[in-house]
Length: 404
Image (cartoon, rainbow, N blue to C red; front, top):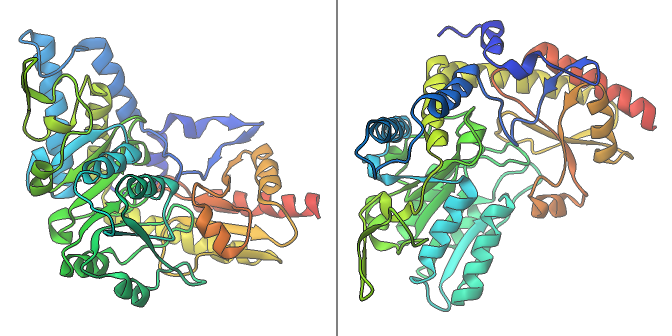
């Protein structure tokens, strides 16, 4: 597929609708992406033609559904370059994957052990670790940041010790768009024997991670931010950790044999996939992966960087506007206008058909660092256009005039 923005936009039915009488300009992609017709068709096809439970039936529909679901797992394995397909665990999303790992480590940590997160994390990559510390007596350490929204790597190095057992960092900040130096973070953590989980929820729609090259222990992502459906995601778990961690949930599918005296667990990935999964979600996730790869991540990155550069320049021409997070970043602009509340700006631009996010973006420590209640966040995807950036800028100018 060549990168023709107008042809690509025709694949997304929602982009042709109007909001409040204006053409929709969807700039809340960091919250969830829109879905191409190919993904929508895959969901309809499953429920229309081969809806059945998987792994358990010998009848034709069950076999077809199982084959399609496992084919999606292999697509995801190849996309992320996991060594084995069974290292890809289907989850309900990024948050589910993080909690699965946190639950597993509850039996491995001791009082006084240390785990490290960064100040740039989403709440879903903070709260589970706080809960884990409460259960185990482990201590939570935090990598600080600078005014540019970048982690202070010298401070990170000083936090590491033989007490460090786990390090958890997002690949890209959902609130600022900062791209974290995860290669260095992983290497330094491994040098003291610590495991690493990378939250890839915000990165995987912009960057194609190579998990074997990264040598990461755990990596989580959500389909809905990669043009796939909600309610499904993946946890990549190195085989050695998959064998070491206990199951997260008990039930069907995750067992080998059950008796009232003793139950033995299935091997990977089924050990962590209790119950009937989101079957059509997994299948559609595979279709979304195919769609993104057909466009090509180099083309996606080039276009999104053009949007980011152009939008940054145009927005900074507005007097009193400040952008938060000015280091190496992608596809996100978080900003405020002096004297105006971000919620008020967001409400007005919505009346003009512009969808942005306002608030703390489930990243309150970042807002506390900047001493602000929140920001207006415009987040871009490959189907956005320069003309939509212009519409955003004009809407923000109008909001400023109306609120001043």
